[in-house]
Length: 458
Image (cartoon, rainbow, N blue to C red):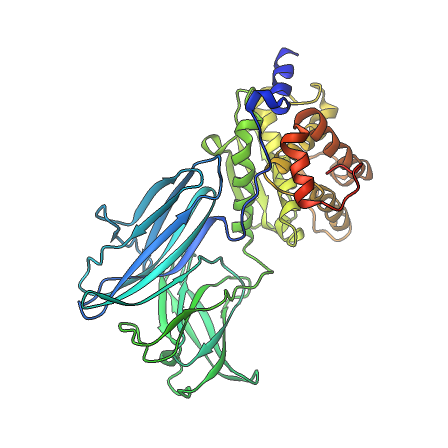
């Protein structure tokens, strides 16, 4: 009982940790930032320089980032950003801080490739390309990172610059379709990209018969249904080729589909956001969930909707589960947080963490931990109801949900009306008993649900 009383202080008393508030992130902040194109070096008459800039939007947590570079053939690419040629850069970004990596233009020949930055908390980034002729900068253009998608659509001219990155280890092929302004497909072709590799080109290079005054769009899709494409486009007005830019360049709106999205990337984003807030919430347990003690995350391609945690400190999230709740990160966050609740239980050495140590309380205890994590990480706790509702809808004759969902001997309890009805009570319990109203719930309600009645939880 003494340990449980200390935990309640750790979770609920504002005096234990000072003023805390929900963790919200700006649009575009992610734990995986993909940069489909890099360019560095070249003769003094036409040199390219790449700068990668990162900002940590969190005002309380330090971001730890690893930047990995890949050449066109998929092998590690060593570029000099001021500390010698390296294919992997690791760095920290202080709360509210920034980091800039600028290539030194060390190669006499143009080098191209791609990069991916992974972080333990969401960060924002941008890539900046600079064209330098005889020591004088004549062109500079920037672009945000992107995410994989099932189809990429972009405005196009005949000189459109396109970069495609393959994040799979096996070689992939992608179909390129040129569509005129009336919506008619003029021509299609296929390009191949090495495993982990990169390919950049101008549209006229793959469609040499395309009229020079062509305007329309380009559609990029994987050859294999279900695969994803990572692409980026650059508008050019005149005289563009792969080694020299003499025209006006401009970035274009991201062409990735909003939905369906990259489910592995979203699962990792949700997982890391939840872990980022766990140390301050679960301090007193001695099992401190967090980025430095993260359980092993397994993202499985199993066709069954399922998620579970194991005593060996593994959390498995099936892609089918993310696809079931594919329109709501908050619904996914509750399901992932529930599994992290089981990890907390395993690490505590008891059946439960917050509720009395009884087998009947194991699942409600994990739900309560999940509600606290979800709320603190800036996800909408009402997503819990949506997640359970979708699981209930999918369970049964449809065969979508695993028969032993969440490793439960009777998975119907996971989708029961009783569990659904408990969600509002969990929000109230989290806000009144474990999370200070002034620290979390009041700001959350003011920002996310300002039009709810005063008596409604959040």
